[in-house]
Length: 273
Length: 325
Image (cartoon, rainbow over all chains, first blue to last red; front, side, top):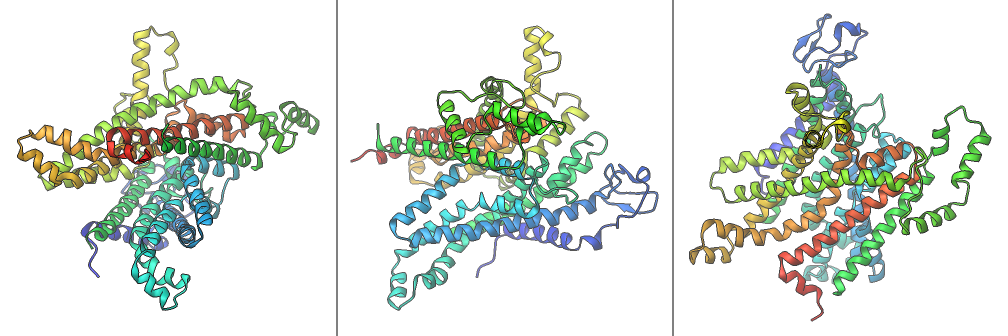
């Protein structure tokens, strides 16, 4: 197996660091104590408060450590991104593969549904669903997954059709392999590179969308805070404490850029193979 | 009419119809009642029942849907439950504001994106290409609401140069037309800049890839060999061929652009369709939500059809495919 190129490795490194920090959040952030808000609020980054606690990224208007909020927020944002794409991947693979194997009429129906779902303006639908049901984190994942599986289905379908015409698939079925075995052993491994590239890109996308919903107050609800709600809370203190809103945005951009780099790297590797 | 166009129109109609129906169902089965929100917690059951009856909310679901559909087909979107205003007049004020933003930023995004991508694909400096790539990837990753926030921090609060709220100043009505125009333009700058910057990254990346793909094509070698100038080779031969996928992207980017405006309108309080939609959803204002959903889906679908037609103009080969031989 050839190595991933430098872009993908950089992206994976950054993502790895952020994920590790998210996992280790209680160890690398100052514990929240019962402090007097007046003494700890709106401290700028790299300062020490009256109790001697060091604040890497300063504090917000309730005296909470921004670095800690950022890391705990990343747990929500990252898991929403990963779980959403896992759901999209499963749904998309099932729909795409069924469309490739099913008889003509059934296949046309599945592809029609995919095309229709692609035509629906996603943000409009998200906005409706989120605003109408005030969702929990699990529901946000479901909604994002349900509106995001179509590109995967298309990719799996295209790859499956391309492979089904190949002689080795004929040989496999001549040797008695059933459709499930052909799908799992022959078609999905071929479809994996482009699908994984799309999934990586989709993780970044899902994190951004969830943050957008949270920004409008429609995503994961308080007291849990994703990066979007952190950005929204920074909006009120743009003038006297810009770091509150800047930090989560920078983190989000880093994650999405990493996803893009990994996806690009995977795609190029596929082209040069 | 060629068969492809007819098929495209049929599909477009199906999508709009589906989206509208889906929205209608979603809005009506969602918890929360517009009348309850309008009258407040102090209203008696009789008052709520009477108000619901007056608007027609107590009729069977399918009847309500039928009534809405027939009215909408004749261009009547009803009256807003929350504000009592004619939805058409709400749309008439909101839609030009959104269209202004979308069209201007689409134009700017593509002019800038094509220029940047073309430069990147043809430069010999790897450092220049690499550093521009970092910028475009980062811009592409930025959510609009956050970039808007950063721009507000810089231009409104630090430099005190540009307004960040609404489409015109509070005193706009009392100004003469030259001052009013300046006021409107100043309000337009930040939302437009936000929407354009988040679009430019993706477009430039795409154009760069498309231009690189054709950079070493034989027809370019021929063009250079027969003495066509550098600028003319790039514009007439390289760009023209690279534009085909870019034009397809144009149509596909319309939905993204519309979703971008929802967030950008929210952060800059820009009085457009996105704002109307968000407010309508929050107030469970069924007629407003339905009208906004209809308009948005029609525009998105029209954008896709337009992109198909544009591909036909840019690439004569694509036109041939649709015609039966």
